[in-house]
Amino acid sequence: SKSADLIVLTDGNQADWVVSYIAALAGNKAVLKIENQFQGDTPPVIFLEPPVNESGKKQNHEFFEGYANQILLSGRPAVATDSIQQAEALAKRLEEEVGPGVLLTAKTVTEPWAKELLKDPDAYIKSNQPAWLVYSPTLKSGADISIPNYFSDRHIKRLNSSNVNRTR
Image (cartoon, rainbow, N blue to C red; front, side):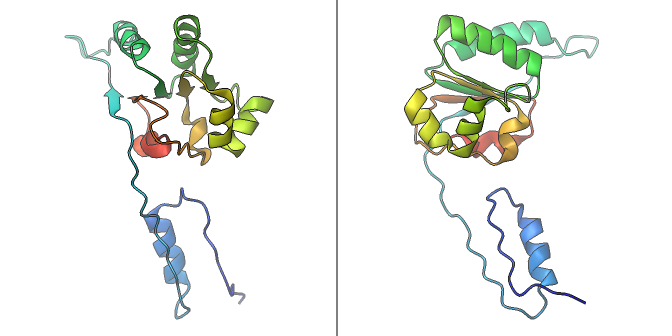
């Protein structure tokens, strides 16, 4: 049987259970874990969930309009959503009312600017100064925006909450 002399897990996205599993596989070999203790100051997080009407159906249109207006009033919002259609609609309104920003979805991820953003998010943001960020689970690929207080608010709409602290 073959075994590795050294395993290095470098992605900050690794779940604790994955690291523990790999450590268990190491058997009697030495394991060194270095935990990222950085907490940093992060903007407030607002989870968006549409209200349910009397018949149990979610009222998405009214919900979207109401929260779109709230998002438009944010200083410099970062918005996560799992709906490409809503991301595009919100980005269009933000572009018209606030100015240029970033829409990162599966549709835009292959664009040269998106590759630049994903390669070095902080450098891209410092260089381009987007007024807003709307993103889909595409950003879950490991991009970490660590400029303190750049985004004033984070709005999360029906998205796995593991993306919540990817923007600071």
